[in-house]
Length: 341
Image 1 (cartoon, rainbow, N blue to C red):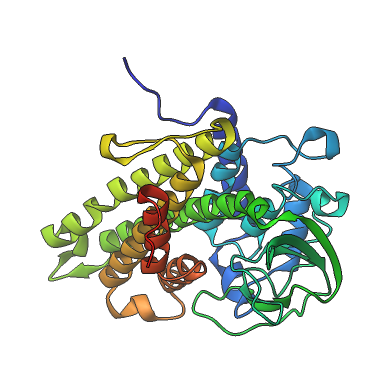
Image 2 (cartoon, rainbow, N blue to C red):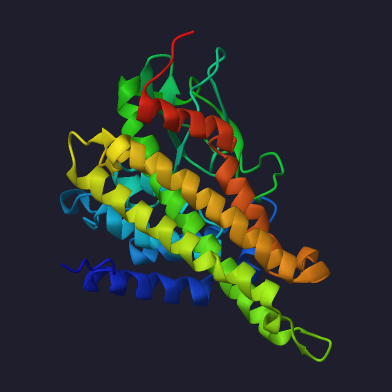
């Protein structure tokens, strides 16, 4: 029996639409111009016209009714273009938020991926510098806070609109217990993983294009076997990350009581798969951008070359949740259970 791992016709249409949109409206020059804050309001307004901010919400509240797998397709196009808009964070937050201005994109939502500290501060919130609404955990509760965005934050490797936000100042709404936030965080991991797949894909394309043009000893650099081998490794890693993100999306959308049978490689638990996808895609993006930048030689570090922006974002985006060791330990807890002591 054959298995079709390709996109559905609807998803192919979504990919074509958003790839075309970002190619036209968000070439690398747009991301470069948006640094260091990493936000382009004009581009966000254009995304609103597409209906993207609310496309994952129910049709009954003005959304597009898209599945998580559809949103994964969109998130990958965001990564391909490193578009300077917080669409990933917004789509993740709207897994539980339904206010009309958020669905329409008139207000921007962000996800505080770490609980608030003892002083009620969410540290380094992705999109925290530009978001009107932040959802996160404070104590044992999932809360939403509306407050004016600072429109500034610490400079960072990935040129992201990071900022600390207060969980206790502003219009504060309690949504439920802290466990409710797991739905939001799982979606954030999943969509960030898809964006990292997009980064890796473009990094590979940039590397291949460069080694075909750059000559050394009178021949293209790409004719050297060592370069060919380095680039030939990338499609497997990229396609593996893409497959894992879509499996996680399917599980989160369709499986209520998923399996975690690591001994038989039978895992259908959505939360576990989302964490796996995040880790795998992050590693793949880091590897793809590293090799592509390396094959660019010294030019790879020059600001006028696009690969350096992808290199920085691959590392910046993948570190938002924490270093790979801490995220890997959280995955181990999901797979094998927590260890006391």
